[in-house]
Image (cartoon, rainbow, N blue to C red; front, side):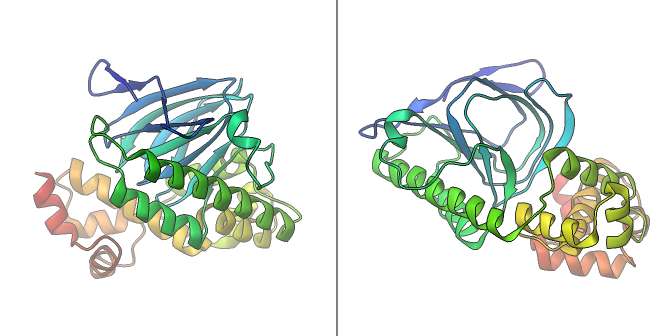
Length: 280
């Protein structure tokens, strides 16, 4: 991968490197800083999300919309499409693989034609955690070709397997546009006591469809998904402002400052106060 410095702190990711000794496999590694990523008419691609990425994302000729790629999930981008991702907040980045025809001639998994993001499953989460240990934070460092080949192949197998399994279980999925609307609604109303019924009504979908759709995309229950959004919103306020902790908790929908502190300790291993001091 080659990255060209852009104005402010943004980088433009504009290339993939071939995996030595593995015909038809290419990879790209993102670091932990904001970037622009643009591809058009590309082969099938799978991204393993090493951390959460908050972005403005445009698929094909559609509008650019706010979209959050969740940590420890996979994104499948089907061949022939185009996309542009303006990553604004990046935690750990991603590793992406492109699968050319030379690879797919030997792949046993069945390829699905629709693109999907935030694919969560136990196998995918374990694979991302392994990748986080093996892939260097500095993409200029040499990556072992054999490990990269194994990682790319396992990402293909587990992601396509998950797509096929969820397709069999669900009669109605949540589209990328519907999921984006869900994220926007939760973000805009983060201080409220959100309910499953309210969120489903906003999307004009049954509660069961929304619940199962969020679970399939993120691996989280709808409750846990909203909770992670509250933690993300509180983290931004803590880093960017000196708002009192009790007001941060109220603004992000926590029942109390103590509730927020307990969740921060359990989910990210630190307290809100300590996170603010480290940011300063």
